Structures are given as structure tokens and as C-alpha cells.
Figure (cartoon, one colour):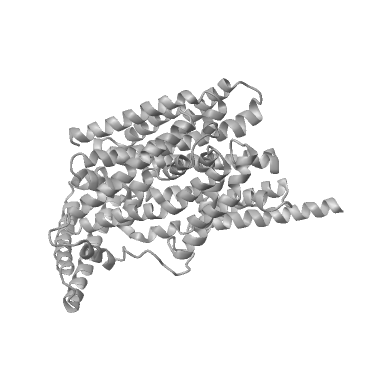
Length: 558
């Protein structure tokens, strides 16, 4: 990188660290440290809710997802606005008026301690794994920019942020989130402007987008009802609804955000803000990925984007032959792309050039598949370079200054999300387990000391998970897969708690266990898309929970 880029990144990270430490002086009590004394304005909470979800995974994984698969991922969020409205009417007033620190603390008052502890335990499992994926995302950037191996970058990013978070409180995290969102939005618009400016002379935005349309990358809605397809209208509206309800309503990393609001009404407004800004923002991020795909119609993309993977085989004769075939296919595709984009609406010319473009695209992808197969054969390792598409593009083609801005935005997103997750994990560990079962009476100073130790533990755990996360596929999918194993079942417990007075503690406890087991069985023995795990888990928990509750009530009557 240019020295200007290093200066931008360094200045931003130093400022964020300083500002976070400065704000921790207001968090020397338990309520101040965990909930900012319930004093934050709605707009700050709303931006913090969005920033906690908008990690580096979104900027790295979503753009790579759009490059490979197009805009279909937007359907994932179709259930979000309805979910936010439901949560505003239910859990926000319940949790706020209950004056709880964690969502799971509420369950003890409604059911019993064992249900609270089990639910919190599954939250710790799900978010601990997800936090590891969040650590892995910026490590992708660092490994490309600095030339470090992934282990080094994971430790640098993960442990540095862990140390920072150990001394911070949720107030520092929330206000850092606000500053982060400004940088992220600025970065997104700058990237969009720069990419379009790099299109060949005479190729308009509309002509360029037509190339993406030919490959199906502009398709945003799939109306087919297919349980095995991840991104459809119905999986987004139904599976996405259940995922959003459980994530924003039952996950401590999100619940902790609106519990910091001044009142119930401000907590509600913060969620509604996220509901109506998230989809347009996600659309812009996906559009960046599609535009990167279009850009590579006119510039040769690497056959393998992950440089260290490419370096393991690129000296072999087999790779050289495949790469020659790949570049020949690219040149054919480039010529066909230019001809198609400049067909000036002539149907006959457009039809011929479109066919040539599609054939060249197929040849290019065929050569790439050969290269991937060679890598797997030579190394015996799994392969996925989706997460490296956007950072490779940024570091190769963005001008000096812009690279620093984008990397600063990604680092800011990563640090804020990691610190938010670690803060939630620490809160649940201390409030739901340590203070509840180990040391019920102690000073605030003691609990804050234990919370910092818990933060350190979860930071190390996340680093271990991050070492394996990058090989599991698109990071944006991986983090949602991890969550979907648990979220639906957690949602089912809160449906029993809030939705019906007849549910018993045993019904909720054993219903939760049954839901988790059911999702595990479906994930192991079926090919149903992971979005539907959220529906399955919730339905099983509610059904089993109510059945046990009814049986218990009948025994009491007898």
C-alpha cells in the first residue's frame, strides 16, 4: 500500500482506540459497563444495532457472494422489516420494563433457573462460533495487504481487539459504532464511484449492467418454493423472518443494544431505523460485488483470488497450461462483452454477441474449475476464494487514499462487531452464570474484573474458530449457518415465555433440547437450506413445549 493508505488506516484506528478508552471512564459500575446506564439516544442505538450486524463479513463476504452469485442474496433480508415490527410490540417492552441485563435473565422469572441457563449456554455457543467468523473476515484483508499468513493476521486482529474490549464498556462500543457507520457509508459510495469510473470508454452503466443480467446476476427475486434452495422469496420471507426474530429479539448482542436506550419508545425506534435502512444498504453492498464482476469483464481476473493458494501451484506445468487456457477464454469473453455492450439495441447483433459472451463465460469458468481441481489434488485441502474477491480488487485497482479508506472501514467494522460480540458474551457469562450460580453477592469492581477475564477467554476462543472459518465458504453464509443451528430453537423458548401463559418450565427446557436436536438431525440427514432450520427449531420447541405443558397441567388436575 501507499504511505497515504497506511496513514489513513493508522490515524483511524488510533483515534477509535483512544476514543473507546476515553469513554470507558464512564463505565465503572455494572450497569454502566454492560448497559451504558440505559441512557443512549435512539439514533445512536439504531446505528449500533446496524453496526453490530454490519461486520467486516458484510463488506468482504457479501461482495464476494454477489460477484459469484449476483443479487439473489438480498432476499435473505425480506423478512426483516416485519420481524422488527413484531419485536417492537413484544420483546422490547418486556425486556425493558423487566430491567434485566440479559434476555435470558427474563426467562428465570417466567420459567426457572435451568431454562435460563440452558438458553444462555446455547447463545454462548452460537455467538462464540460466530465471533470467530467475524475475526476471520478482516484477517482476509490483512493477509493480502501485509502478506502475512492467516494465523498471524487472526492473532493480531483478534487479540488486539480483545485487549481493547476488556477495558471498554457497551457505551464505548455504541459510540464507536456511530463513527464506524459514517466511515462505512462513505467507503461504499467511494468504491461505487471509482468502479464505474474504471469501465472502458464508451461503456455506460446501463450497458455494463446488461452483462451482469446475461449471467443472471441481477436476478433479485426467485418465486419458486424450494426448501433446498437458500435464496428464494419464500426462504427470505419465512426463514429470514424467523432468523431476524431470533437474532434481533433473542441474541444478547442485539438485545443488549436496545436495552441501552433511554425508554421503551426509543428502543422501538432504534429497531425500526434498522428495519428500513438495512435492505437499501445491503442492496448497495451487493451492487458493489456485481460491479466488481462487471469490471473483471474488461480486466483479467486472477484464476485463483487467494494469492497464497495460487502460489502453491502456479509454478507447475499443469497450472501454466490451465492458466493459458483461462487467459485465452478471458480474452474471448472481453471481446464478446465489448461487442454485446455496444450492440446499440440491434436485436440481431445483440443475440449473436450475447451467445458468444455466454460461451466465453462458460469456457472461462471451465478453466477456473480445472485450476481449482488441480489445487485440491496437489494440496489435499478444501478450496474457497469467495472472501478474497473484493479485497484483491481493492488492493490491486483502487487509487492511493481510497485503499486506506476502504481498509479503515473494514477494520472499523470488524473491531466494532468483535467488541460488541465479546461484550455480549462477557455479559451473559457473568450475569447468567457467574453471578447467578457461583458468586451471588460481590462488589461491582469484582464483577467487572471477572467480566474482563471472560472477555479474554471468548477472544481466544474466537481466534481458534477463526483459524478454520475461512475454509468453510462465503463468510456471510458461514456466520448465518452457525446462527441458524441455534436461533430458531432460542426463539421458540421466548415464544413460549411471551406468547402463552400455559407453558411450563419443563416444557420450555425440554422443548429447547428437542429443538436443538431436531435441527442437528435435519442438518445431518437432509439437504434443506439452512434458513429453514430457524423455522424447524422454533416450531419443534413450541410444539414439544406446549405438549409437555399440557400433560403436566393434566397431571395437576388429576
